[in-house]
Length: 323
Image 1 (cartoon, rainbow, N blue to C red):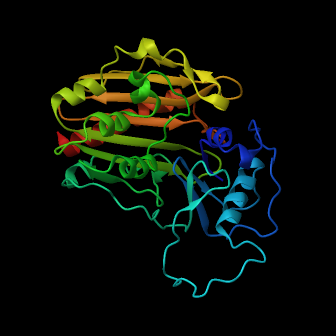
Image 2: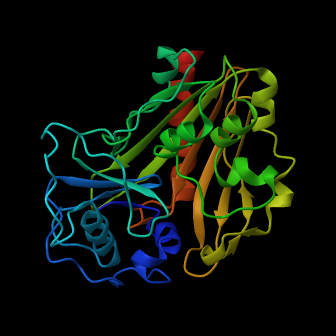
């Protein structure tokens, strides 16, 4: 079973996980019914692939809990007229009420419409990776382009299903590091002519799992310069996240790409040493970002080693499409 940011989710969803997450320990009772074999439970920050053999501790318990939240309560009256079988399920609140969840069939996309009101760009969509090693474009959240302007909340949900932010916060200048450059674009550059492409890739191999998100942003040169400006990183050394503990933005060297490139870890405390590994690449035409979240089980290769390899592949594809 592949889980993106399980630890972060558990820290946010206290009622579901029962306090500090601990891999292999189920903190909630498993419901009597089982999750359908072809079900995929999806929330704004992660995809949980359930029903693939035996569960894995608190992760399977969380799958079952969210599936239970989507199921009728025993003893409750039957609905007057059931929805058509072909109708996709609507968003439902999770057991913790802190994030939205959906239960969809494998191969189906999450039923969240693209909120973009500006024109999309097919070339920008083709700039996104669709494969890297054993990781492939997610069925649940395939690559998409949001043309701005767009309702910020709707766009944040739509893009957030593809790009994973950290649970830590700091000064407003740190948001592009903790949450992603796309988030800063929505906040400060929600204007016509700006486009955000985003995708999530995940491996289906249990022996070598990998999940990561990629975004490519196009727009005015001043915006691209702002997104790649690292002058505020020093103010991001004391991040906080409530029950997620504390952390910092910690730069580390990577091979140069584009006009400017840099990478950093979002470090953590307690049981999560690193929440995310992130690389940003600036060119005169776009800003590219790759984010690898903390995940269980961990990929076979150190994410700090994987990150520049993924970024190089993403840069090569973007240059071929947009150069």
